[in-house]
Image (cartoon, rainbow, N blue to C red; front, side):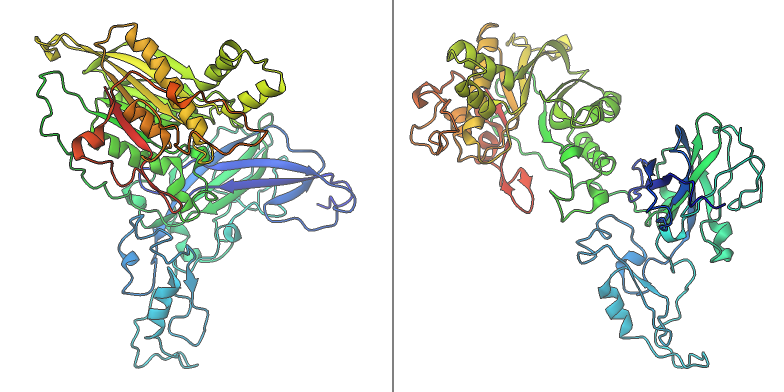
Length: 576
């Protein structure tokens, strides 16, 4: 079919899937789009997985199929630990020497011809034992065993995908050339009807291995299990017209080898204060955790991490295992993405016996709905019941201080500069929890409630004055709240304060005041940065707070945040 003169659009089908890991949900990233062509583009060849059509792509839906491949030899070097281990630790970029690319011997005169190696180190070790193969093909005196060269000899996924340039659509009863059985489909085929794999994914190569690919699912999502470990998966995505059911385009990609689930986290030994429990009050366990929202877990920010290790589905499994292992009665989380709270965290923690509340940051969603982070606070249902729940928006506090305290016009130059400096969208949560069962309550101590605050302060290291202002405002709000309910209400403040122990934020929380000479109070400012902090003598609060780590261990931990660029303490649990 010649469309060179009539074609006005190019259709493209994109399909991507992350590295499969046991127990982690795989979510295909498939989309089809069109580009309008001008006369100069009509005769130009199209890239793979594209075709020319007279109309733009119609409304369409996708049908998916998952296949499990045969076992493969991950590395031909017999001394490689990855021949028998598919642990994520062994397959990380760090373990592979900084590269996730495999190597293949292309020397036809070598005994290693077509053998695949997981990295250059294994290839170098294996090369020391290789020998030259005579032209007659005899292999006498072999030192290196002859390796199997079937399924380990792979080309890239896209090179072996169907639905590339010149992709076929079905018209009438025309035979589909990519169909395994030569079957035909009519234009009114139901998109929901099960469909065969279009093409064997091999493009005529390795027909002997064709039967080893086994269909395992027709759902959009797939969760790899133990049978998939050490094998590749193949995903077929077919786009069908929503109106007619016509097959529009189709594409097949293969994954990398399926990795096993990450090893269980090392058991943490809890340190107990020798004086703990002397008051005879109720005991409970509390934890705080910045879980790193997916919108911030980018390879630009963490270039030393594997892409699959940054994915939320992989990290969520590990985060939940740590939470379950710690078994807190109260859990304060920061950088919880809104859609992840709704679709993952709340349901999973609810199944483990928790109830919770969520407060997202003030700003609008970053692009798609739910792509904004916030704070989440959970409590064990058998331990506590919720009495009160409130949220604090620091943007609102800045607006109130500008207009009601300082008398600034929000639209004036000073008002705009003031609000721009302080409006960073951070939030805090505040709940009052009460012991759920009468048996938990002490007869000597009638304090059966506790106030828990959870917050995440501004992260930019160049804005220590903003973090100090946020901390001061939070403490003022808590003073008003707690004191109005009686001085006996215990208080705990948890969160990511983005402040090390040498900052004014730490001093204010631990010492109730800030030294006037502290550099965080005297930030070098220019004409564009207003001085919004009051006199340091007025930056105070009435709580007598202690840091949980400092009180129990005698010092803060070495790190709560560990990256290439920063290693230090940013997270705290404060108690009254």
